[in-house]
Image (tube, rainbow over all chains, first blue to last red; front, side, top):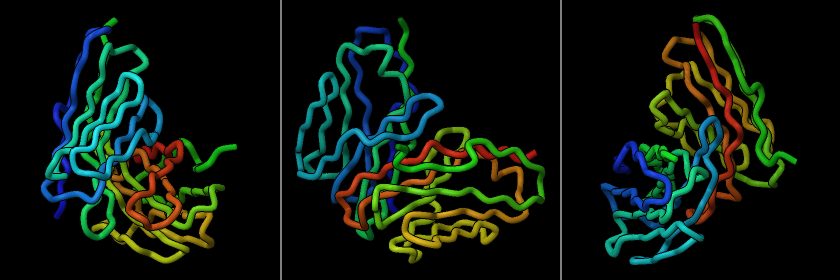
Amino acid sequence: GQQVMQIPQYQHVQEGEDFTTYCNSSTTLSNIQWYKQRPGGHPVFLIQLVKSGEVKKQKRLTFQFGEAKKNSSLHITATQTTDVGTYFCAGRAAGNKLTFGGGTRVLVKP
Amino acid sequence: DTAVSQTPKYLVTQMGNDKSIKCEQNLGHDTMYWYKQDSKKFLKIMFSYNNKELIINETVPNRFSPKSPDKAHLNLHINSLELGDSAVYFCASSRDLSIRNEQFFGPGTRLTVL
């Protein structure tokens, strides 16, 4: 079945630094979504990518969909303490089922 | 107004008991879901309903029985609770089954089985 993997599982970042988290699918995806879950909270939708090679920005967050539509990345610049949380990618392949990756848990050192 | 609400927020119970979690969405969505999030944060879909009809039933033990009395509600009943059922259960909804719809999650129900 479809698998979606995220690396790294944990990301310790110094406040002010940049980092990237990666999402890889075992199958070609129709689209990919990113969600953020704050500690003790619930996943909240951030963005969706649909087109091959698509790049979208939300302030300090840059999302990219790979050319083959099998991978995606989230890059955060100048990390702030408000960026703490777990970032999930979720991909849809055939069958319309949204499969979540294992998440990247981001911890920010002030 | 809370878009997707769940009750209770916390549930602590003994092994072998039966319990229910309720979910309601006021977004007018057609599709609702139940997810299980374990201690390692893995988010796994359990069930999906569209207009009260079961669409997805992942390999979940038949001790778990979802019920959708109307498209705004999707409840989860669990029989004979086991230690491994301890997790956070999230309800979610989306406008419909279109692949481009985002999902809106409820606040979660933290279930602890002793």
